[in-house]
Image 1 (cartoon, rainbow, N blue to C red):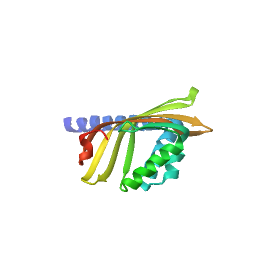
Image 2: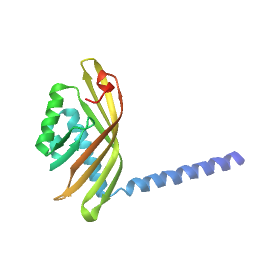
Image 3: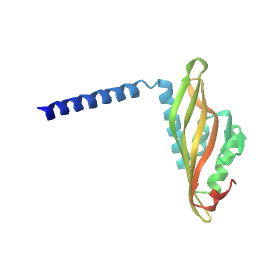
Image 4: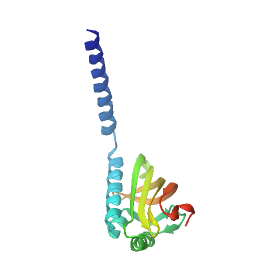
Length: 166
């Protein structure tokens, strides 16, 4: 009898927790979901080295601060910077994974915070670098676009590239 009661209580707890998780996922705003989808498209574009698709998620006046503290303003300048990276490091892949997205609908702005990872091969071997990032999104004509991104490295392993900031 006691084992059956415990199993019933455990099953009830699992059902309650599962229902809470479904409610949390269902409470994600349409704007947040659109940003997550745009980020997924951006990650896919980087993996494919599709410069046009990468640039489509940026505002015309986007500002980016790279992990090496290089700063570039404007869609075209950042597109050129990515093109150079793909030429110099043809196996480059970056993945950004959002931990939180906070939307302020009154101003059509959102904050995305999360973890990023980059991988490529240097002359002395493969490396993996990563850290935290912050992106500011703006809703323009019904579409969420990146206005600014800041990438902070917190780990790097593999090639000599990791020993000092380039």
